[in-house]
Image 1 (cartoon, helix red, strand yellow):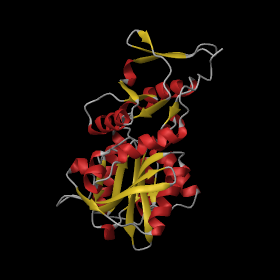
Image 2: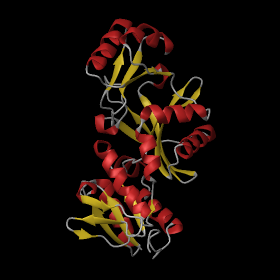
Image 3: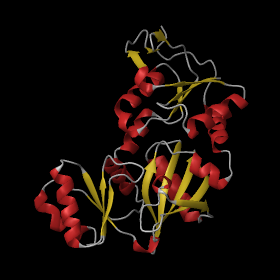
Image 4: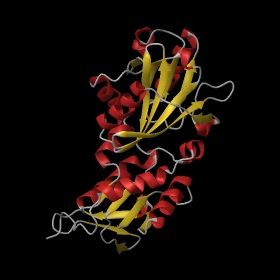
Length: 300
C-alpha cells in the first residue's frame, strides 16, 4: 500500500517508528509536512499538491498533526479523505478531540465519569465557578493547552481566584476542574486501537509536581487495568469517533475518571515502557481497513 504520514517533523520518534513499521511490512510511506500541502477543492478533480507538484493517490494517511496547526492540518487531512484515502483518525474526530470543552461535553453526555469541570466567561462568575468544582485545591487548564502546558494547581481559594483572573485578563479560555487528591500525581494512559486497549502504562509526576506528563519529567511503568477502566477508555475513544486514541484516566475513590482523550498519542513513552510494537499494531489496523488502490471518490 501507499501511505502518507502528516507531520511537521519526520525526526520525531512516532514518525520514525511508523515509517519503520510500514516499510518492514513492504509498504511505501512518505512523510509530508501539512503546511507544505495545498489543495484544489473541486468536485471533479479534487487534489492535494505538495511543494509544487500534485500528489498521487494514497491508500491511507496517518495524521500526526500538532495542536498549533490543528485547523490547517485537519483541512489537509479532510482533502485526502475527499480523494479517497483512508485516515487512521478522521479529521472530524481529531477536531472534536482537540476542542477540550466540546469533548468533555460529549463524554459527559454519554455518561462517562470525569473530574467535575466548570467553564465560564465573566469574571463575576469566579466565586461560583470555584464552588461548582468543590472549592480549592483545584486545577485550572487552558483549553488550548497540551502536554501539561497551561495547567496550574491552585491550592487555596485566593490562589484559584488569582490564576483564573490572570488567565481571563489574557482573554484565554479556561477550564476549572476538581482536583483528585487520591490520584497522588498518577494517571493511566490507555492506548486504544479500534475497540481494544492494546497497552496501558501508569505515569507518575516528578517530585514537587502534580502533572504526570512524560514531557514534564514524569516516570512510567506498565500497569494492569481493571475491566471498568478498559471499558471506559474504549467508550471514550468511540464517543469522539477516534480509531486510535490515548485515553488518560485518574483512579479516584468513586471509580475511574477520564481526564483527557488524545487524538495523536505519542508512541515513545508507551512503546518504551510496555515493550510492545504499537506502531506495528497501527499499521496492521490500516492493512485491515484501507482498500489498496481504491480510486479517489471524486474521480470523474
